[in-house]
Length: 113
Image 1 (cartoon, rainbow, N blue to C red):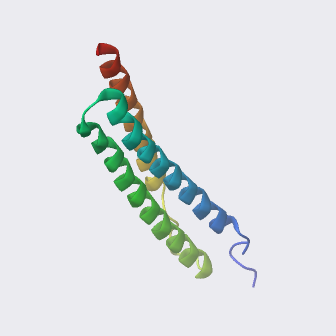
Image 2 (cartoon, rainbow, N blue to C red):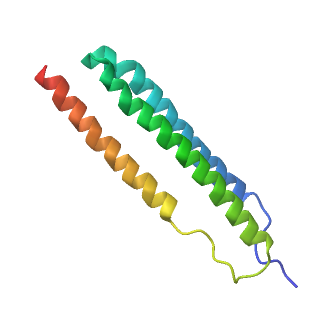
């Protein structure tokens, strides 16, 4: 009986890619926490950075759960269980869109000052 999937490192590479994405979001949030209050004034500009750190943590956790589920499905050697859908990718796209809108708001606020 042949294996259902190639036991290569593709699932691990995918998990590492999600981990890098979460790390990039966390670093961007830390930079925002450092730069926005200094640029725009006021402590309230730290809140977007904190929200970004929370989102990065949630993304990291969701990616870990996804990787565990993919690994379980692939090692089960049965096609009855479905692989994870694209919900995590859709959530990341929505988060990226919100960050872009927030960036535009920051630019407009800075231009009004």
